[in-house]
Amino acid sequence: MRGFDERLFFEHDIATPFNNLEGSRYLLQNSLVNPDEHVLESLDILRRSARTLEKMLFWYWETRKTEESYSPSPAWSAKRLPGLVNEALFSQAVPLAKPEGRGDLAAIALAVPEESLVAALIGAGLTLQAASNEKMRWKIFEEKGVVYVIFAVAGSKEALDPATFFRKMYWPCSEAITAPLDAGLPYLTALLSKTGGGRELAWSGGEWRLEVWLRGEEAGRKTFTTKTPRHQVQKVRERK
Image (cartoon, rainbow, N blue to C red; front, side, top):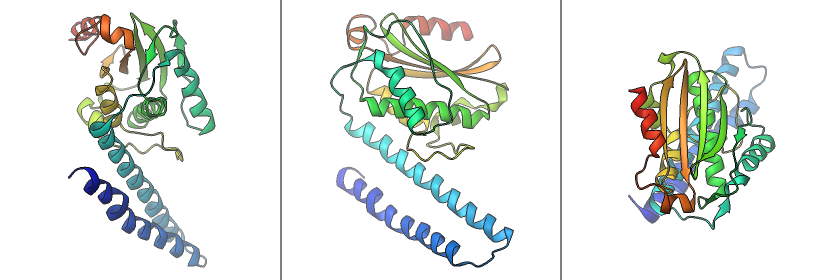
């Protein structure tokens, strides 16, 4: 299913009954007089489950659109990336720590759409935090013409399964997220695949580290020819 048929499926065929179900729940909740705790709990489960389903469908559709019809944006300076992320975290009250910055990002130009990249990175952080049940910390820096974003959480090695982690469209957070900024890793993967970037999840030194890299325009043409940066290949070999 492609093109118009798929768009119709997501924006009408699924959206219509979904909206009917959510609307019915809302009417039911507001018509009850002095409901007991079990009824209230059931209504809350319906509300949260509907919200989760809505977000899963939204990010699946966004991932499919990225895979099928990605369009690069005009080049913009990577030095703006930390500020864009911080602005989104603040304006949407996203329960993530601000990323640390290191190095000079000004010399790197990115062509990935700003909003898409910010949503993908914040979504990755929220996913790692939700999947591990631990507070996440992260940093953004440049090395040899490549932008790196490193996410890390301390905890148990058994807390995450990399194969499952990268496949799930959505991980519900313990705190409600109203903004559409909690994408799962398939969206980030789709976006990186269109920009010559990559990602890896590894257990090292008592913590899980999700490493993301994006090439600047010049770095993509002149520095590397493989998908994985050379120093990243070395780190992977060391872990093995």
